[in-house]
Image (cartoon, rainbow, N blue to C red; front, side, top):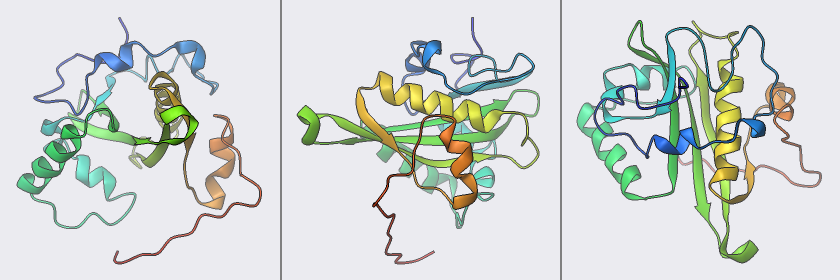
Length: 192
């Protein structure tokens, strides 16, 4: 048995936890030390889908280490969670929980974007990768990325992409991500 799923997903998971069990370990690309791997993230650590109960487990506090979150009530959280869950086969938010503290200490999102191109295929987009500053250096970011890359392949995506700051490019190349010559990431922000 791996440390992947079904150990009490507390209420409703965002997606079927069994999807993580079917991931092919040969697809994991990063090198790991000290017995840590996507199948075994560490003692007392558990990787699984986001669930409604994660509001109380500090999920939004974790995201605040990444970007502005705002004042999100439990009702707001449940509403957004329900909207995402209703878009079947689209949102895959994976979290790492420290079972000892009961806190969410890592998270990453895969959004499966439906396309008409490439024989009505899908594109994966990696978003919101974060590991708590108290747990950095334990290879958890690598685990989250390896899981999302393998998951995007399992879900039939023809490619997976992400946007990152220059300082993070080297980290992402270990998973096979490459800078695309002649392409630029552009944005138009309406608010922060």
